[in-house]
Length: 204
Image 1 (tube, one colour):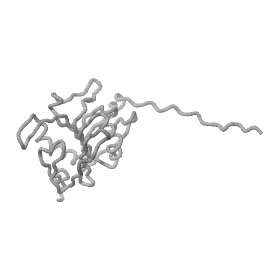
Image 2 (tube, one colour; image 1 turned 180 degrees about the vertical axis):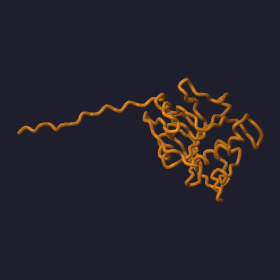
Image 3 (tube, one colour; image 1 turned 90 degrees about the horizontal axis):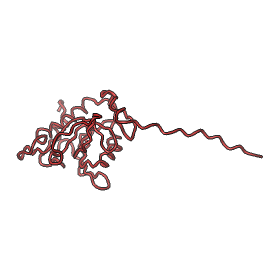
Image 4 (cartoon, one colour; image 1 turned 180 degrees about the horizontal axis):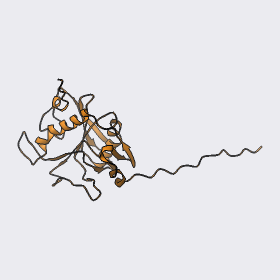
């Protein structure tokens, strides 16, 4: 008896990889990023996410987003919010991003496509239910691959900031700091940050 070979379904070609141009064509309010060639949509950030993002910037901006200064205003950084970037092969919009002025003489500007490609020295992402897996996974890998030296993860739910530093093998955790603490953390250890101000709640 002859047994006919089992039918196999034809293999599907891999889906074409999305481009930076396709990503940038998506309206900003749809909250998309380009991760490993795929468009990834995120949930809209809530008020808590926005407040923590703004508070992280406010805690550092007046002290560091300037030329070199005195002890209470060390300066030396360019800081910004939600910059469209191509970093480590992904298209992303980090919550808070910074470059050292001693390395980057002028505030980085978008290229002809509309994205900044100058690798930051530090990135902070604010975690949410829709972004945490990407922020701690593919984006973390891409940031390390690109050479981002310092990575912070601000978690509104746990009211904490995890501080990471890049080493050859990946990112290592230098510390996890919680509301109620006063934090000195790389690369902004020159000043102390009260985390109650970052995770402020008007009910408190």
